[in-house]
Image 1 (cartoon, rainbow over the protein chains, first blue to last red):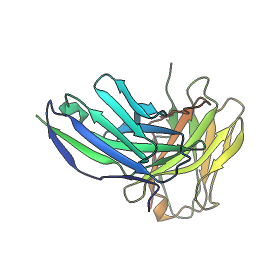
Image 2 (image 1 turned 60 degrees about the vertical axis):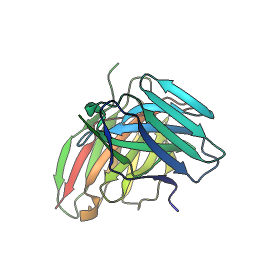
Image 3 (image 1 turned 180 degrees about the horizontal axis):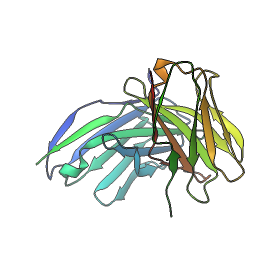
Image 4 (image 1 turned 60 degrees about the horizontal axis):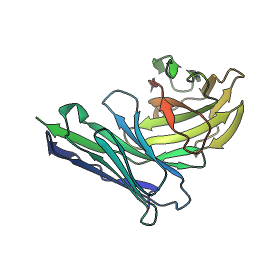
Length: 109
Length: 113
C-alpha cells in the first residue's frame, strides 16, 4: 500500500463546475496536509494546507480533512481553464513531505 | 520577498560524472529539503537540512548527499551519475513550525547521457 494515494485521473470537468480531488494516507501519525498545484514543466505551487479536522476555505478552494478516515480532499469551485494542472497531495511526516502521484485535472471551456 | 532560487536550471552530464546543485531558500527560512521528481516515481524526498544539520533522510543511495551552510543555502551532490538519475531536482524551504509548509524553487533539470 502506498503511503499517500490519489486517483491519477485525468479528471475532466466543465468550466464553472466543482472539481473534487481526493487523497488517502496510511500513517495515522501524520500531522499536516498540503495541496500543491503543478503546471506542466513548472515546480509545485502550494495552494492550501490543513491540520485540523473539518473544512478550510480559501477563495475558490476548500480543503477537507478527516483524520479518522485518513482522508483529505480539495474542492475547487467555479473551475476555470487556468485550473487545468496536476494536483499533488502531500502529507507531513516528521518534517518530510510524502507526496501522492498527483491527479491531472482538465477544465474544459 | 524573493522566492526559492536554484542553480543551474538545466544540466547535462555523462554517466560516471558527479554534479552539484545549489539552492537558496526564502529569506528567514532555515529548513531546506530536496526532492527528486521523475515521471515514474513522482516526487520523492531526498533529505532535509536545518541549521547545517541533516535532520531527515529519504531512501536514496549514498551517492546522493547534501550540506547546508550557515546562511541556510544548501547544496546537493550526486556522485557516479547513472542514467536513472535523470530527473527534476527540487529544493523547498520552510519555516519551522507546527504546519511546516514548504515552498518550492523552480528546480534543476538534470539529464544524464
